[in-house]
Image (cartoon, rainbow, N blue to C red; front, side, top):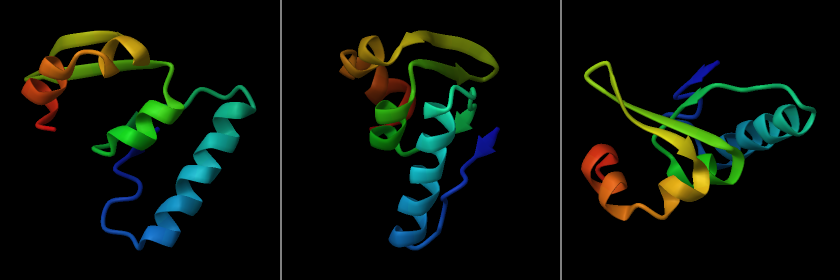
Length: 78
């Protein structure tokens, strides 16, 4: 489980961390990531969950989330 693992780090360090996470996932190990970087998450995640005040407002595949710009804007402020 990673919570904002790259927050505030230099870009080169961030990329090294994301590369390591991708290797772990490619090895078949499940990874739970909490992060604001949607692009990196979309490249890696097969499933996404958005919580708002403790309630699940989205639970589904990456493609479904990526296609729902209104949901992204409303809950993720992007």
